[in-house]
Length: 72
Image 1 (cartoon, rainbow, N blue to C red):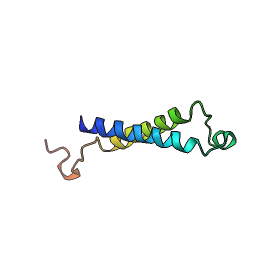
Image 2 (image 1 turned 45 degrees about the vertical axis):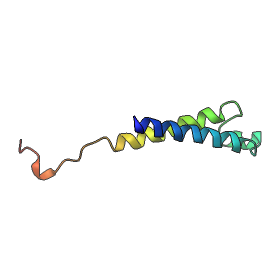
Image 3 (image 1 turned 90 degrees about the vertical axis):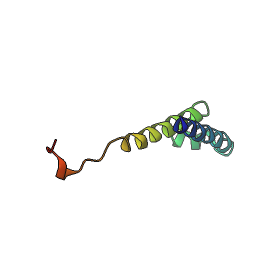
Image 4 (image 1 turned 60 degrees about the horizontal axis):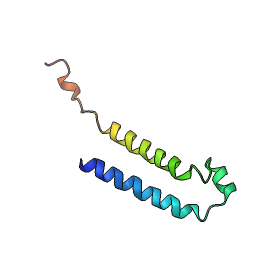
């Protein structure tokens, strides 16, 4: 539950930062990075969410001691 709250806070703060930075970007600069004014915030939120998912997936495995393989 705490991880979900932290994740929501990170995504919300990133969306706020995107809205603020969009004021300083021209349409051609947005097109250069692959976004338009309509999908910039949602695209960045999707990237952040994917990065958080990837980080969480990497930490999800349990380490295995190779000396104990087959001992059970």
